[in-house]
Image 1: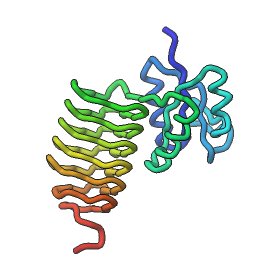
Image 2: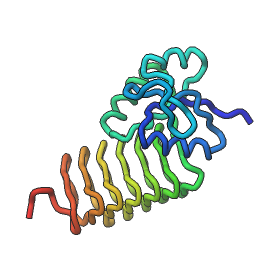
Image 3: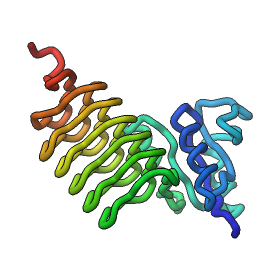
Length: 212
């Protein structure tokens, strides 16, 4: 079976995790790795950087028209998403084969689902989100565009997460919580109250940083 060729945009640590997942997927092959801040020839796992944004048109003309944006920064990923869409590329999702996606889920284009992650039934994942290693997202969650759910995070049922929010490693969120856009949830936090747009919280229970 011929593999689908994709461009991996990004060459940092997160991109190495994505490449490792692609290598185990079976149906994809990395045609090129692009990064505007890394030197030509720098290696991820097997693939090497072959250029930056300027190389996209050349690859498109050669017939490679699928891209996965493997960048950890939510805002950077969002900016690249629109620029690459404007060039008529398809933004593709990468899912590690050990991830569990339960029935009646909706996962939008460009999302990365890492090893051992679980996405529960009737959950919606927005565009170019990251559901990282071992994260669990229970039923009826609504995860917006360009969110990063870090390794080991546990979201209970009916949680809403706004665009570009990052939920730090090992954090837990109880059922029915609403977290706004552009929030930062500190590593290991236990979120038992709603978090407004732009909020930064940490601790157990999680409180706004700077408050007693």
